[in-house]
Image (cartoon, rainbow, N blue to C red):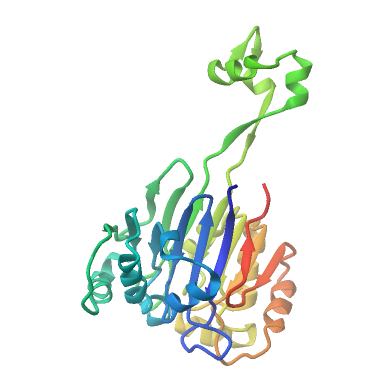
Length: 300
């Protein structure tokens, strides 16, 4: 059975707390696993969340600040220790190549896995598979940062009532799908387009074009909200978003499920982030992320 869900491994910003580990997020997309921003402690959080090294097919790093990448060393070594049988592809800003190399080879270990380095140097597609297209778009942060977006291809959904209306049954259903028409009935008369699901991941950034591009029409948007709205000047100065700004982006982009995360240690009440997100006019499904929760993607 296919599973599409976000496994939250950590939700703290620069400083972890007793209840929040540094960042880490695994997106399960049917049989694929994409690990985003493995901060310090990610390997242990994976154990606590029931995530195995074998579950990881891609690693996507938004930028090379420690809370988003220091766990990379342990994750890479665990992938090799467990002898993951498939290649693992790593995406990260090309400008941080030296940091990736240092983390990959932080200590001695035996390499057993094909780790493919695929750095990001510009906006656009990074990978096209049957299951999704993975894109990156540049964000606005003191160091180079990219957000990521998965888009499932649109597919046709056959409409049983329309098929019955035109007397198309059994093997003829397959024929009209293959040939596009049958006995004067066009495929468009008995089917409709089912839009593919869209997932967006936006970490450390000010408001910028990349944020809006990534969020546009997303079924799920995972986005940083480091600060509350009263600290908007701090957010802008340090290259971050507030809860209200993130929610307004989601509202304007038509996001179905908004996941707020990456919280500053200065705040102890998560309800304040929910309140400010609602005050910004976002009325879709909303999750204030906590470590080790699982958030299913909205149903099609």
